[in-house]
Image (cartoon, rainbow, N blue to C red; front, top):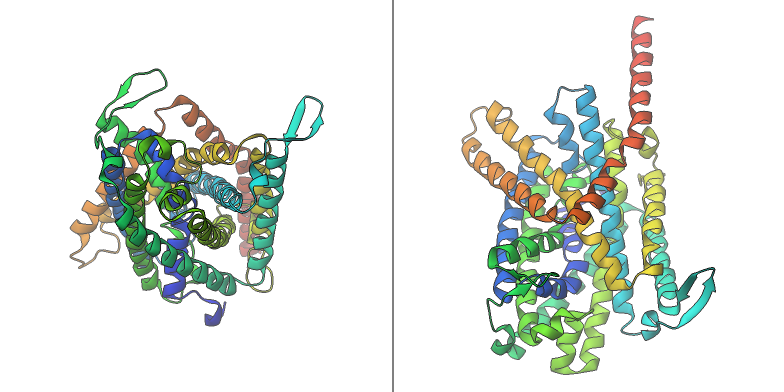
Length: 476
């Protein structure tokens, strides 16, 4: 790949910010308000921000110390075992599979949120009128149109990406710049419209479905899984490390992107709580639009919805690129089926794009029977848990390098990197425990990840065949 097709620092940063600041910032204020009081929400953001910062430092450090291992945090799983061993291939494949499934679910969350904000301009997308009935199933007009909009967005961006990674990256950069400008304006308005009474009581008790009171620590635990969703995508620059102009740009883009996103998240999340009363916020499908409309009227709400559409369009580009890149890079390292290595003339992983977006289309069928908010809620926790396994693995691999001293000869940063890796590991374990406390969520997540076993057999057989052919060639 020529240098002209490589990704520079600012495009990498835009990928990180664009992939993080997507559906989460538009939908999370409402779900967070249900899970925790204002004090619990802010605490969850701060704890998650610190935990993700440790994880981001691990990603950036590994990108520099192990530049030959590219494709994302899930790739490091194979490095925990003897090279070429069954355990190495299996762990690398399962980690890549889980990460890929998480990406596919994330795409659906992004695309369905786009449809939700488009309904601001076209209310028919939320219509509950009957369209037609087949057997015992009745399709609602809003659900059917939402499905069509989501499908058009998916395949429209599919063909944009096929035109070239660099051009798609620049389009993502433009959309990211537009969204940041819009968020800054929202923050300015929010500062003037903030009502202290809306966040009182600051440490309010939340109730579970059984009517039991939820304490502050439990609120933070519950909100932590949701806030982590907002940071999924922090590893975007790491996934595209092999396409970066300089490996040092990967770490710099990851850290800068994280701080930009963290500032946006805490600022907007706090301000929305001060612009809407807690009851209204809990039941809002479009909290940012409802907040700005309350202050400046419906026209301002539509302007923000337009910015939201630009934002989500750019984020969808980044996420679809990410989804195709994951199995492509895994296949290049022998951790996925060889067919995923197929490229077009511009170096785009064509086969991976088709399969990833084809599976994404299947996920989009969830909008036929569910509302937009229900579809979003269904995939968000499942996707988050799918990402946590690779995050945990990356931290453990960094600890392995520190303990063994590999790449640390004469390097004084060994102790510092060890502390960072330990904190990142503890954070990942904590969120995994918090996220799997609900048995339904745990079951869905395990089924999705375990389903990869069905595809591992063909990969292992192809590896054995390739090894046998290589031995024959050497002995001939």
